[in-house]
Structures are given as structure tokens and as C-alpha cells.
Amino acid sequence: MNIVVCLKQVPKKDSILRIGSDGKWIDERDISYEMSEADAYALEEALRQKEKHGGEVIVVSLGPERARQSIKEALAKGADRAIHLFDSVFDTATDSAAVARAISAALKDEKYDLILTGLQSDDYGFAQVGLIVAEQLGLPSATIVMEVQPEDSAVRVKRELESGWFQWVRLPMPALLTIQSGINQLRYATLKGIMAAKKKEIREVKAADIGLTSDDLKPGQVIERAYLPEKTKRTEFIEGKPAEAAAKLVEKLRFDARVI
Amino acid sequence: MSQGILLFIEQRDGVLNRTSFEAMVAAQGIASATGEKLSAVVLGKAIDGVASEAASKKLDAVHTVQDDKLAEYTPDGYVAALKQVVEKLDPRFVILSHTYQVRDFAPKLAASLGKTFVTDCVGYRVEGSEVVFTRQVFQGKINTDVRMVAEPPILASFQAGAYRADKAEAGDSAAPITPFEINLTDVQIRTQLEPKFQEAKQAVDLSQAPLIVAVGRGIKSQENIEMVQKLVEALGAEIAASRPICDNEWLPMDRQIGSSGQTVSPKLYLAVGISGAIQHVVGMKNSQTIVAINKDAEAPIFDIADYGIVGDLFDIVPALTAEITRVKSEGK
Ligand SMILES: Cc1cc2nc3c(=O)[nH]c(=O)nc-3n(C[C@H](O)[C@H](O)[C@H](O)COP(=O)(O)OP(=O)(O)OC[C@H]3O[C@@H](n4cnc5c(N)ncnc54)[C@H](O)[C@@H]3O)c2cc1C
Image (cartoon, rainbow over all chains, first blue to last red):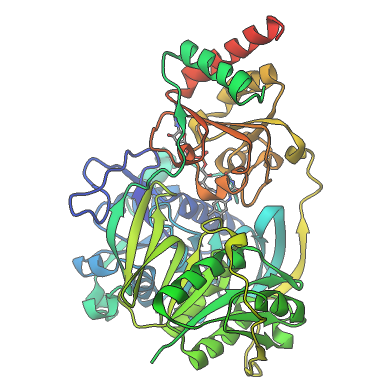
């Protein structure tokens, strides 16, 4: 079974985010990056399926040069090869539809049974790229997937619904699934894996290679301003050394809020 | 030319999803600010009740789309049906609520129409005839204002809780309900559905607990949960968690609070090392008193906390445990 995994690199979870000087995005200086969390789970699921059923895991990532580091991590964990959509022309592809167009074009000649993506990224959180790829490639899809059971020519998946409800659905393959975090337990790359990754192919793909120009990658929506949200509720902040703050808080909870 | 606004009303088993009324508040606001007519669309099989419930609101029309292929929700059925509706009505905006169902089909709908879709909005601003949408990035840590450059119809979904369902305006008289003719004969439903289910009955029902201490990723490792457990015992509270803690199996799934876990409203909700992502917040925002301990003063959890301590939880939690133990041993 051949599985494509779409993954993107995002600022590390604990990053201190500041607004950049153009006021349209964060200041990207001094930020370290990592694989977006749900994508890491999608990769892990692909690797587990490959270990059970054989086949190949192909990683696709659109991003600047630094994205190569996450691609290498995926190869070190066990993916077989990678496609890196890396071209300044892709810089204009800032919405999900444009990114999806590039990914779909890059996958045109690939043979796969499943495409897995994270259910949304930790930065933009559009929650769309996977499904648009599915539509562009004519694939059935299921989102927020918590379990994957391949059958002969179909795949049975457990979808998470709201408030603790679930549903199993069956889709013919090839299909696209968006993976929810927690579907499995993530592995770490081993030293052996890291060594093996050095020999694996990372194919760099430019827009022209897949027949796209900057006109094809124009976004349908643009961010005109990024800013820190205004706090709507006034939190009463309690200051002081830990013991002091603890005493003040307990006092408030007992005599003002009267909840303990 | 595109005209009017279309609101998607979600139903399951003939029950209207309340978040559709939240999105309706935004849709009504955009309609009145732009002078556009507002209609709603309901899809399904037996949906007369849902349609009349929607029609009691201030709307110009309710369209019902009924077909055997829509008896149960599938992405193929919904995309095909709504594509026909949107192409025929050609509205300027299609407004939806950002539910799990909408997440499952609306990006495909937008792609099949070749239109843009702005997801998970928390607000909007009308500028002349244009609408600028506000959406959060980095799990609520930063807001962005997003301008549409694509041609209408524009699809936009609103986050759960962004508006209050009870603020949806009622109509002076019931809006006309009209069946909308579509043709799904050639549409193939590729998804086969099994019945919906809940995991084996939850061992703990946190909805009844008066005091909850919830732990998040700030705790760093499983061993450290014990430190929080001590605070829980001192307080006589229940322990709960954000999703990553349950994903890592540091605490069982039935301790998870949020959109895919339990919804609680205790007297005291003490959030330790939890950032306050919307999917967590929807499960606990109605708590009577919310306390947050977080090292990041900008964490979104402080937007809903009554009391906050900015600092290292590894210093504060033990101090708090000691203080509570002291106060309790002094005998109230
Ligand atoms: C469809 C969907 C459904 C979801 N359902 C749920 C759900 O039901 N429940 C849920 O919780 N999430 C859910 N999520 C995930 C949610 O979006 C967030 O990712 C999650 O809630 C984050 O958990 P967290 O706050 O513990 O972690 P993080 O966001 O990583 O926050 C950790 C916090 O700890 C603080 N911290 C770190 N170290 C320290 C320290 N030493 N002292 C003090 N503070 C510290 C940090 O400043 C940070 O604010 C869902 C997501 C999706 C997309």
C-alpha cells in the first residue's frame, strides 16, 4: 500500500510570537520550527500502515528551505522518499486553495492508495488543504480520523464527531484522510534511521516543473493585518512569590469567589 | 451578479444544530450592513421541523433540499447538493458554522465551485460593500483580518461560541419555506456509513464535579502529573486534562475536556499549563470561577480566567497544595 503524507513545518509550540514589522504576520526571526503536530500523527499512521501492509511512504511538503529539516525528520522516521515543493513562486501561495493546487499538481503522476494530511496546521489552522487536494484529484475523503483499517480495495476509518461520538465509515481507495492527533503514539527517529535518511531521495520541485505559474498560485484571500487579540475579560492577576501568590489566591477563592 | 446571503443550517436526525443560530447572528449582521437579502438552506430527508424552526427567525426565505441521498450526511451528497444550490442562487456569501460536519464537506464544496472559503472566523467588519473577516491563527494567540480577493460567492464559517445563538433575531412573521429542486441521480455516494456510537460508557462523569483541576501540556511529562494529583487531593477535586495529555495516554480519554471530550461547568476550574485553545475552552467556559496558571501572560486562557497567576507551574502548584493543606488543617 502506497501512502502519501502531506506535511508542513510550523513555529515550535512554545515560541514567543511577535507581530512582524509589516503588521501582516509574525516576526519570523529567532523562531525555531517543527513539524505541525497533526501532520506528525499522519506520518506516524502512514509508517504503521506500511509496517503492516508493505508499500511506500512518500512525503510531500511545500515550504522554504528550512522545511527540508522536517522532511529529513520524516525520512529518518521511516518515510521512503520526499517531494519538496520549493520555489520562490510558491511564496504567493498563501491560502489553502493555492497550496492545494501545487500539491495536487505534484501528485499527478504518483501512484498511491491513501493520502494522509493532518486535520489542520498549528499556524494558519485553515483545515482545508487536504480536502481541496481530494476534490482536485477526485478522491473520496474523511476528516478527523482516529483509526485506519485498510481492506482489499477500501479503507474503513473511525471518524471523531463532536462530544465523544464516533462513526466508522468505509471509502473506496484511493482516498484522502485527515488525521486527528492522538490516533497513535509518535516515534522518535533512531540514529540508524537518521543515517539511512541520508541516502533517501528528496526531489525538489519548482512550479514550472509541474506546469504552474504565479498566476495559478494567486490566493483568493489575503491577510491584511495580524495583531494580538484584545482581552475581553479582565483577569485579576495575582502577583508575588509562589507562596505569597498561592496564599492570596486561596484567600480569593475562599472569601470572594467562595468556591472552596 | 451575485446577490444575497445564504446561511447553511445544519441538522442531524431532524434536530437543528444550535451553532447554526450562532452563525445566523453573523449572517443577519452582514445582511443588514450590506443591504442584502438573507436566506437559509436545510438539507436532508425529514427536515420540515428544522425548516420551520429556522423560518421563525428573521430570514427572507428558507430553502429545503430533500433527497434520499441526503437522508444521512455524507460529504459527496452534501457537496453535490449544495453546489447546485449555490450555483443557482449565486449568493455573495455562504455562511456556515465551523462544526465538524462543515469541516468535513465545505472545503470540498468551495473547491468544486472554484471559490474561496475563509474558515473558523470570530468576527467580521463591513467596509462599504466589502466584508473583512477576522480569524485566529496559532490556536487563538494571534488574530488576523482577512480580505477577500476572489470573486463571490465567498464561503465563510464562524467558530463555535463566536456569537450567541440566543441573539439570532426572530422574524415578524415566519419566513416562506420553499423546496429547492436539485438532481442527484448521477451523484455517487462513495462513503458507506456505520451507526454513530460513543465509546464504552465513560467511567467518570466530570459534569457533576464541583471542583476540577485540569492539566495541560505545560506539565511536560507523565511523572509530573503526580504533582498535580497532590493538589487535586488537597482540594478534594477531580482531575481533568486537555487533549495532548490524553493523546499521550498520561491520563485516560474520559478525563478530556473540550469539543471532543466532556463539557463541564464546575464551581472552580483550575487550568494548569493549558493555553486555552478554542476546542478546550468550549468544554469549560461556563465554569463559575476559572483560575489559570500559565507562564505565558499572553496565553488565550487568560481571556476567560477570573484569576490568573503568571509563572512557572512547577513552583506555583506545590505552593498552592501546601497552602490549601494548611488552610484545611486549620479547620476552616
Ligand atoms: C477538531 C479538534 C478537536 C479538538 N478537541 C479538543 C478537546 O476536546 N480538548 C482539548 O483540550 N483540545 C482539543 N483539541 C486540541 C486543541 O486545539 C489544542 O491543541 C489543545 O487544547 C492544547 O492543549 P494545551 O493547552 O494543554 O497545550 P498547549 O497549547 O501546548 O499549551 C501549553 C501551555 O502550557 C504553558 N506552559 C508551558 N510550560 C509551563 C510552565 N512550566 N509553567 C506554566 N505554564 C507552562 C504554555 O505557556 C502554554 O500556554 C482539538 C483540536 C481539534 C483541531
